[in-house]
Length: 285
Length: 258
Image 1 (tube, rainbow over the protein chains, first blue to last red):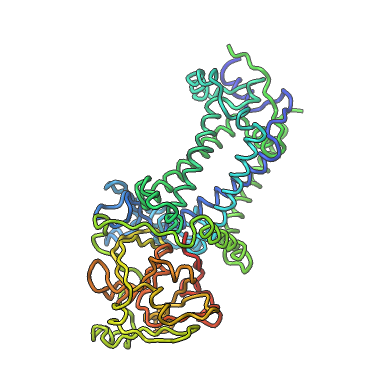
Image 2 (spheres, chains in turn yellow, green):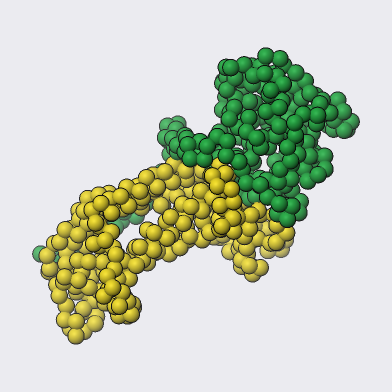
């Protein structure tokens, strides 16, 4: 079997058998998380639009320039221009960042475009309502997931990589790069890169984004004097919150890409009904 | 059965999913404009306020900073000069005729001149001002403790909120004066002051002269500038839009600790 036909065989697992891969609580919590994180991200961008600049330090006005800034200026002969400035370098981002068309079709100065924000019109108070409501949904769902994963041993059985697996990271990377995916018994388990990616998201990125969100709350800052300074101060926390949100977007992009290349419908079905069609053992040279 | 036979169905399902996505997104705007959905979202605000009190406590102190952290210039936001002839007349005289009126649900209503406010128990603090938009600035404030003002007028047991009525009109024809409100926990908090100095100088007009509220564990819009009258009330009903503040009447959260 050549590589191309092997790839097709994995994408269209015509044979094989259905295996109960994801249990109901995990499936429910996965989809709640999809909704909550999507709305948190989109309402978060709307909140960012109210002051589209990021800083490092305890305050925004320290005498040092912003790390990153998105805006619009009128360049006379050129007309209005949207720009993005990162660490002193500037790009013309008209149409997407700084200046973009709204739902009514007219060009307006706004950092992130209307199609990626919730709500779509410039509306800070409403975005905050969405954000803080779905923050609770996300946190409660996340705590339920953690409790379930520990109690059901999902964490130790399905997510924690063994020593032996860790030794195969190099081979796993090579397999991923060649779009070669597990078949047979191995396809029932997460592979080692997948496990590490999930663990980093669950135990590093998601707790960090919540913590940095709390660091922006003036009330929460009063919990322990100066705790926010451990992260560089409130404006640094805001910058980290923003950066981690985009790291999560990068994770989702890779996750969805992997879902597609390893069999979109098979994967989607397994996260909806729980049943995954195990690709038959391929001749792994 | 070949999986290939499923392709048209899958393409159809894919289109359904994409259209659903588009519908959800425009739906978010419609939901935002509906009567009922923002009320559901407001549950989040109530949970955050409860968690703030439960986890952080009523008396916990906001972080204080050092002179090295001061912002070179303290940003003036919102009104920089109230469009109000009576206020401008007071400002022209250096606020010599300014009187802070304190009344409502209190045993002995009183008027305080600036000199009388300066004679009250004062506090100096270097704190961070966090705007709801996302920026922060650090300034050094000196002012009369609000608790000292309230002790002087003796609040009724039924008083639940302290309302600050300000000199700056928020609409173009001079109406809708700015106002804000806080609860009694924040009113008696050690860091809640009526500031008359910013960075060791008399409070500039751009930052709320002669008096602005500092309520350090909340966002900037709670820190009412140009305070002319303080009223203790049992509820916000009957005051402007009835939500406890100018921005609250525009849909902003009354609890601004997050």
